Length: 22
Image (cartoon, rainbow, N blue to C red; front, side, top):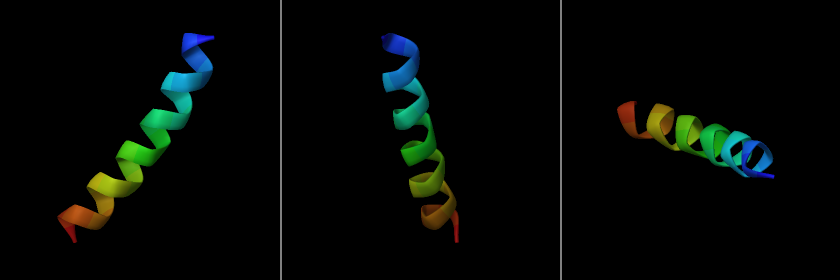
């Protein structure tokens, strides 16, 4: 349950972080 939510959140966070870095 938490893993699924965390996985989706992690992906979103990484994408946001990557975009913010650039």
